[in-house]
Image 1: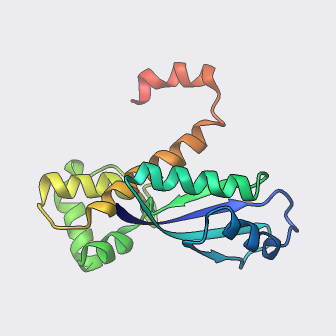
Image 2 (image 1 turned 180 degrees about the vertical axis):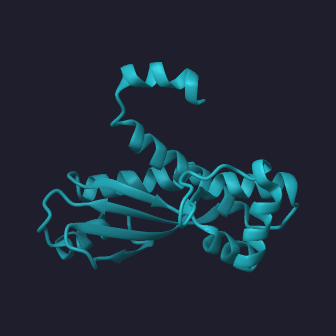
Length: 175
């Protein structure tokens, strides 16, 4: 069994719902391996250190545990997923300046960002895969696995709101 570290952020059913009401229920339903964050009204964050046979199993079991404890909770985001240059540099032990240099020097060979602006944002999974293929670098395989699964989680959540008719028309021109 591997330990996977990830965070799930949920919106509660009612914006004014007191997240403190759910702490005991989350613990009872299996979230005893998570630190629970209650800082923002209407939101609850669970920072997991979950042992599981795979990253898929870790995330799926955590989502199921939260759903049993708080059926009305809606996933906002699973992390680690979206990262900027500073995040990438910190995770891989580089300086931000070195990361910026890599992005500029590699040009089109570096993964495309999800958002190209200030700051630019990438899916961590695609960046780690690029490093694995182009700049052999040792990093925690559990991190790569969990980044892949959290990216899929976030993409699936976003696809749920997609207009299927538009998707078919745009897919051929975008992908």
